[in-house]
Length: 313
Image (cartoon, rainbow, N blue to C red; front, side, top):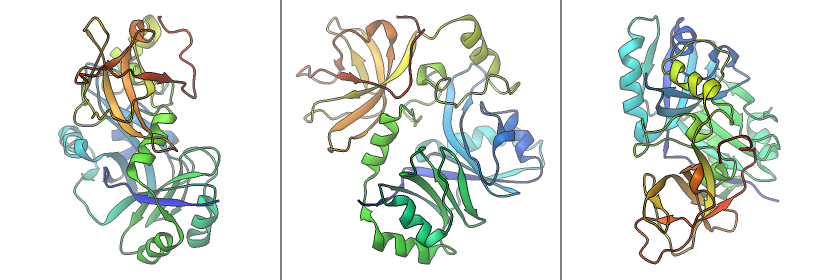
């Protein structure tokens, strides 16, 4: 029985404030912002007009007029600059360079009880959130064993210190590995604006609400959903311990053509490397390897916690 804690320094928070924030975001992103509240967060994506994903995010509220969008750190400024082109027409403001908040990950059998001891109530259903204006605790599973913490440094200094003393040190690699095991694709600088939501399985993971109405890129995303089938999907995979890779790396077959791209990398519970890859469905039964791997070590696909049934094979 244990609880692990790590600082997710590869994540960043974009802050939104103003009475028009919900309306503005509703017209820009793939999720139904009306379902976000101080007790419920949502995953979503922001797309180009051509339906390519600029960034994925987790959206929550720390207060009635304070929205937080957690994104991968290396696409924060690109995301903020793109949104800023349109937010000027709304009574809403965004801030992307604040350093007064931090993002932590806490997981393990004792994570819930440890957090409860220092913050009080904790959420127990996926995406549910609890907290105050200076802290947001978000459940990242349905088992009360994985939580994301968005904390204002000054107001939560004592809780942060106490958590550090009562949790074992974790790693960002393991946190990323849990995202990979859950089949949750993350967009970073190497992959931004290159893939559709369907290629990242966002239509299966709840990132896209097909009944919410218009948003940037909606026409392309909806057309693929209702009138076609994605020929590319995201898969979790294990790789040999001697392999090293990074987001954006090409994946090839023995014949040589590029059939996929590395999205994210991490480690499993045994500290073995795992990756999430975007892959042409026609190649999923073929031998796969990294284009840069001269030893041709195979990539082995792993099961996902949701079904890809019905997609083009």
